[in-house]
Length: 95
Image (cartoon, rainbow, N blue to C red; front, side):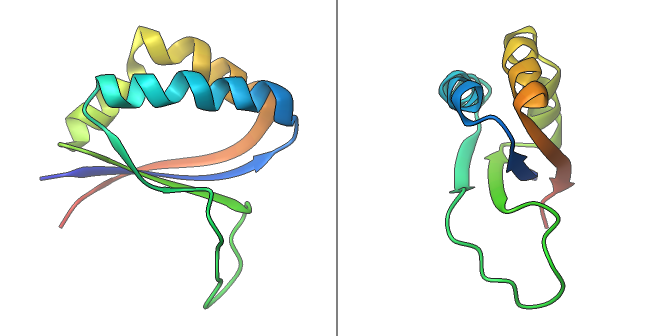
């Protein structure tokens, strides 16, 4: 069953965030993930999103998503993201 990572992001410092995006693309692919949505236009139907940028990643499983998140490769990229953006990050089991 697939695992999905859903991120809601507000970028506060765009220059370092660009480096995060560059690094993370390779790391996501290494762990079998792919981007399904990556910061495109958001249309709010109900309520309000907490942050304007929405990212959806698909991994082969929740375990694979967790391996990406906990990986040594992602640690450096994660620290860049945490310093340059406010983020809500979820892992969701697919149906």
